[in-house]
Length: 118
Image (cartoon, rainbow, N blue to C red; front, side, top):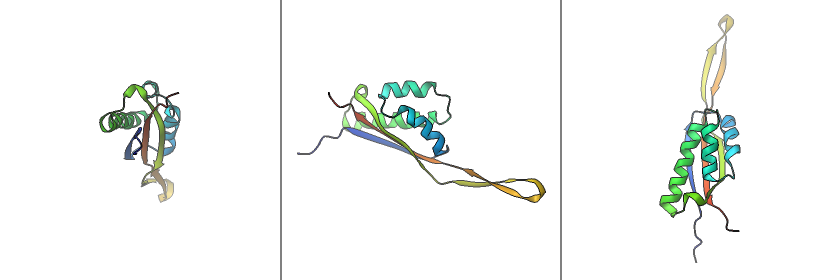
């Protein structure tokens, strides 16, 4: 007998936000209900919340369409940001020298799952 799938995932690759800053937001929504996560993201001042909101929306849509799961029963099971490719730039400095600037990118992944029945 096949086990019923109770989770769906969504990933955004090469998002132009540093993984360290994205993780700050992801840590606040991990293990929360989806509706609570939406409310938290709406009021956080961080710039990464917009991209994370879109990924969460996509994960919920995947759960509803692919696995017929109800939005009210979903929680954010996993939320993580891995490091993507780094854009390397140089800033001119005094006396003809230059210093490197690393513009970091992230791969943001969110997994939503059904709440366990108690």
